Amino acid sequence: MQLIKLCLLVLMLSALSFSQVPFSTDQFRVFDSNGVPSSIDKIVDAMASNEVLFLGELHDDAVGHAIQAEVFRRVVERYSTDRRIALSLEMFERDVQIVVDEYLHGLISENHFLLSSRPWGNYKWDYRPLVELAKEQKLPVIAANAPRRYINMVSRNGRSALDSLSKDAKRNLPPLPYAEPSAAYSAKFKALMGPSPEAQMGIDKILASQSLWDAAMAEAVYRFLKKHDDPLIVHLNGGFHTESRLGTVEHLLKYRSKTKAIVVTMRYENDFQTFDQAKHKGLGDFVILTDAKQPRSKRS
Image (tube, rainbow, N blue to C red):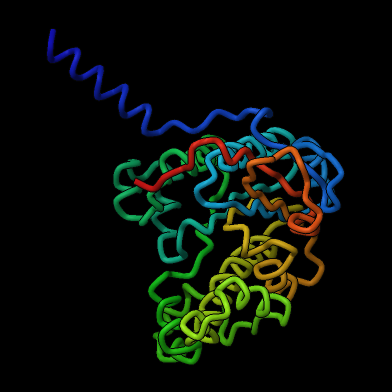
């Protein structure tokens, strides 16, 4: 009897570890770029005439992750019959695409998928629901990010360091040389890092590594768009990469100028029901403010 109880407890704890904060409209508000109240349905409706939906998150925003899962669910429900839908993730790096594909096709167990794909610490409760829906619906999942080891190379030694990589290694990167960041993005990034001499030390190399991140995700999205008729990609990334339609969005438009994309930027705020023009205007085509009083999502 004690053994049975212990087994049941283990199963319960396992289930809890794979749970996500429930989606609740009481915990967020949706606005358009200018602060006019909007809705999740309007975001989904907008994808009828767009190809890429960028969902820019704060990585520890549990409410934001629940919104992402709900948006993806509704997009799949609405458009999967007629369009080629893919889920694209900053949270997986290009060199594990084969592992992601093996899992989606049922060739390897979830345990081996997690052991081999270097998932983020919050994968099980924040990103797993989307990957599992994609698996269930037989939709591709794009491991979009450049391998971190190469991003680190650039932050230490500059973008030219990538030239010494082998041809096989470069297959996990966007075509070199990747584009320089825009002036607006550069100014925003340097302001984020702070004005102190310590913060600005080596800033150009760090910015180059950030741009590699952006270019890699953009080019991964571009590859899918190029291969399919009437595609629809839902891409998850940290909000800074796409807010104000900079960064990854700019790189994507360099690869494919005709791309039609919608940017959603999520921010948590104590007063999430109030759109602050000075803080929030123009952060995205839609801006979602979530309840900062909710517990943060944590990496294990």
